[in-house]
Image (cartoon, rainbow over all chains, first blue to last red):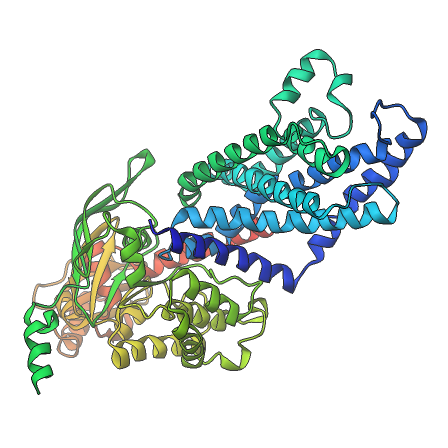
Amino acid sequence: MNIGRFLASSITIAEMEARKIRHDSTELWTRIIQPALWLLVFGETLNTIRAMPSGNFSYIQFITPGILAQSVLFISIFYGITVVWEKDVGILTKLLSTPSPRSSIVLGKSLAAGLRGVFQAIMIFALALIIGVQIRFDLLDIAGVFAVVILFAMCFSSFSMFLASYLKTRDRMMGIGQALTMPLFFASNAIYPISVMPVWLQYISKGNPLSYVVDAIRSMLLTGTYRNLPVDILVLVIATVVFVILASTTIKKLLE
Amino acid sequence: MTTDVFVNSDSDNLSMPEKTAIEADRLTKVYRDNIRAVDGISFSVKQGEIFGLLGPNGAGKTTTIKMIITLTKATSGTLHVLGIDVFKSPETVREMLGYVPQSISVDTDLTAYENLLIFSKLSYVNKTERSERIRDALEYMDLSSRANDLVKRYSGGMMRRLEIAQALVNRPKILLLDEPSIGLDPSSKKQVWQNIKQLNQEFGVTILITTHDMNEADELCDRIAIMSEGKIAILGTPEELKRNVGGDIVTVNLASTPPTMSLPKEIGSIILNNEKSIQILTTDGEEAIPLIADFFRSHEIRVESISINKANLDDVFMKYAKRRLEDDMYKTTRRTRRDFVRRAR
C-alpha cells in the first residue's frame, strides 16, 4: 500500500465531512446543550454544597475536563450509526468502489470525528470562560488537550465503526451506543475522583480508557503536573491504532 | 519520421493482440445458506462494446457486477479486467473502472461539484487535471448550471446523471452500470440512454450494463447475456437472440374457454394458454393467421381477435428462462414498494 495515497485519501474523507458540516452545522451547535447543562446545573449545584472531595479545585473546575471527555465520547460512539446510514444510502458502496484503500475510509472518518471533537472542546472552553471556571489557558496545554481530544475521538469512532461492521443496523447501534456510554461515563473519574468509588468500581475504572483521557486533560487544564501524562497518552495511542486497524479489516462486512 | 518508426516498433498496442475488456471464467458466488447467486458463468466483454446482463431481480446480475468492482469476493472461478486478475490486484482494477451502483449513491448533503471533487481525489486524478475533468464531466452530463446546488434539491434523473458524471472523472476504460435507468421517468430514461450511447461511440468506453428491462437491453446493447437463477441462459446479439426464438408470436383471443387441444405442426406450437387467449409460436406470423383462423373455425371455437407480435427479447427470455420478465417485474416492484413503506415508517 502506498502511504502517500493512503494519507491523501484519509484527508479527503475527512474533508468530505467537513464540507457537509459547512453546509449544515445545526448538529454541532445542538451538541453543546448537554455539556452546558452538566456544567451549569449539575456542576454549579454540587459546587455550592461541596459534597465531593475535589482536592485543591472547586467541583466545577474538577468536572470541566470530565464533561469535555464525556461529550467527545458521545460524538464518537455514535459514528458507527453514520457509517450504517451511509451504507443504507449507498455512499459507502461508492467509497469502497474507488481505488482508495479501505483503511483510509476508516481513518478519514475517525479524523472527522476528531474535527468534531475539537469544535466541542472550543465550545466548552468558551463556556468555561463565560461562567468563570478557572482553567490554565496555556497555549501548549490547550494544544495538548486538542491532541488528546482528537486521539480519543479517533479511538472511539473507529471502535464504533468496528462494532457497526457486525451489528449492521442503526437500531442496534443506537442500543449499543446507549448501553456503552453511560457505564463508561459513570465508571470513570469524569465527575468524581476514583478514591470515592467502592473498591470493585475502582478496578473497573482503571481499565476504562475514559479515565485515562480525563486524567490527561485534567493534568493539562488544572494541575499542570504531567507525571501520568505519558502513560495516559500511550494507552490512548495503542487503543486508537488497534481499533483503526480492526475497523479497517471489518468494515467491508457492512456491505454483505 | 524516425520517431514514428521507433514508436511503432516499441508500441505494444499495435503488435499485441487486443486485450479482452472483461473475461469471466466459471465465476461462482455462493452466499451463506448455500445460495448460489452466481453459478459458474463464463463470458467475455470485448473492448468498445456495450454488453448487457439481462434478467429478473435475483438472477445474479448485481452480484456479478460487484465481483468485477471487487465489492464482493467470488467463491470460485477467475475474473480478469484488461488482462489483470481482479482477485489479485483489486486496487489496480478499481482504478480502471467506473461504477454506477443501482441505488442512488451520490452524497445528497454535498453539492454536485463537491461530489465530483471528493470522488476525483479518492480516484487519484492528477491535481493539475482535476478541475478541468470535473468541468467537462458536469458539462457533458448537462449539470453545469446546477453544479453548486446541494444534490438533495436534484430530481432523480439529475442524480442519476451526476452518478455517471462521477464515474467519468477518472476517465475509466470500462464503465459498469447497474440498472442505470431504474426508477426514472421516460424522458430522463431517454436522456440517460443517449448519454450512454454517446460515451460508447464518441470515446470508445466499454460499457457493461445490467437491466431487467428488455427495451433498454435492445436499445443499448451490442451483445446480451440473459441470466436466470445465477446462470447465463443464452448469449448473443439482440438480433441473433430474437432469430433464435424461431419466429413470431400470434395471440388468439377467444370468446370462451377452449377445450384442451393441440395444433397441427405446420401452424406452430402453443407456448401460453390462458383462460381466453392462446399464444402460438410460428415461423411466419402473416402466413400462419389464415391457417389458425381455419383451424379454430373447423373446431367451432369462436375467435374474437388475432394479433401478431414480432419476436422481442421478452420472448427470448421466456424461451430460455421459462417465464416472463414482466411477471417478475410486477412482483419486484410490489416488493420494493413494500420495503419503501416499511422504511418510511
